[in-house]
Length: 92
Image (cartoon, rainbow, N blue to C red; front, top):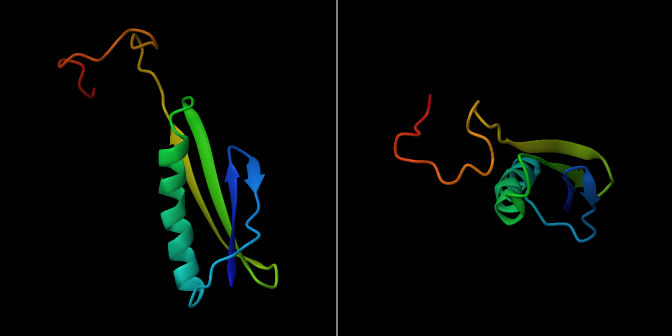
């Protein structure tokens, strides 16, 4: 049994139920798959956001930590509220 505690911008949600996994590799895969799902549900709510998933074994020992960070930065002259980007507003 493995438990997946999540920090959403520093707010902790403790997993009290756990998930049966065949071993550490599967627990890691579960943690990695969880983070993009959280991001899809929580973003956008600003220009920076951090998600952390800490995996615990049934004995309470932490065994894996995965982090996903979103960081949006405006380019000079491309300030918020300028409206939608035009076709000429490509990377660069």
